[in-house]
Length: 315
Ligand code: 8YV
Image (cartoon, rainbow, N blue to C red):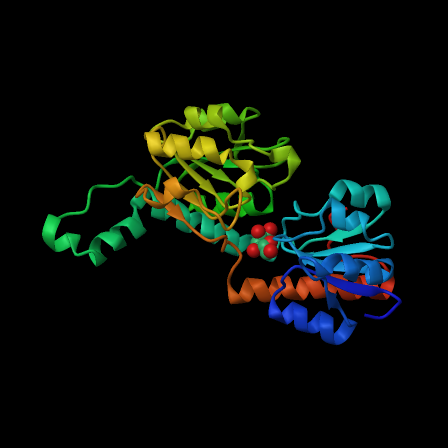
């Protein structure tokens, strides 16, 4: 770590990013546990740039402990783990990795959509258990094409999901903070109303305080016992306790979840349910997309260190 422009690694990073920041920028990793305070006592003053991921982020306490922090470079499009309010107040720049992951996260949403409605992985388990030979045909499932689909958050990723669903001849509507100018899809200012008219609700809204539990009991009730929920954004957007209650009571037909409120903890009750598909937050997890995210992360870091500005700033 050099005195000028010291780079701090906060949380685990992809090996490619970690190697590059250590080799090229002398970055040091912030230790966890009891060694953290001693490390901060020695180095906090010199840290000007933090490189982190959406999983870890630079939260309020750590940000306050870094008096000369000028930039947070975030690997991932979501930056809800970083204290954006404090960053804005202190003039700390924050970047993320938008766009490069749209396709893969949208593909994951579609994979969950098809799996939950057509019960693909449940049917796979049926074959592996030998049930095909002992009990006969797999139960009938739900048609995935020609459905009424509601997108919660028609942003970069939500728009790609919508485009993919056009190929399934679905009717697409959406709910957003505000109407998207020029969108071909119907905008519903009430999320409850969107849930009511949808067979499937797909959550693609960004995480953070403003979307916390946006999908709650009332929206799940409106989706109803024939309805399905897909979430590929952040677990915090959905009231998970209400979702678990609805699924176990049969008040919702099924759910496809890539994200959870307290990752990597998945509610125990969901593990035995055949109506849900559970993924370990793998939305952007392909070689191609993670390499593109790594490259964009490093480009942001290099540009900041060279000229003091970010390539893809969020504030
Ligand atoms: C990453 C994500 O897995 O980009 C995001 O917001 O959720 C994922 O693509 C994650 O951010 C990496 O920490």
